[in-house]
Length: 116
Image 1 (cartoon, one colour):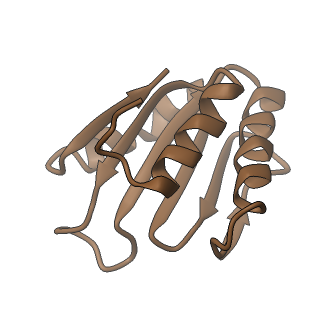
Image 2: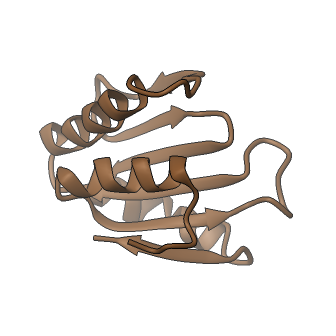
């Protein structure tokens, strides 16, 4: 794991990696967005895996004092957004990730290849 990641980033990345999330990236939005500081983007190969990745992240978050703002898309398991305020986690089904291509949309921000 990248030692430059902050504690919350490490927790999210580790939780996703535990469930075999693929292509885990962190986009540094600090100089581009007032909405959040970072996007964490990862993908799974099925609805069940996407939900398992989210469940793992939530289990880790609930053991901390971190605020959970909202979760969207969990029931469909296609694109789940977990808003942790300073970090917004996007867990995609691999096909949805290719379709929406957030990495391209935010292509001008620094990218950290975290794991997976």
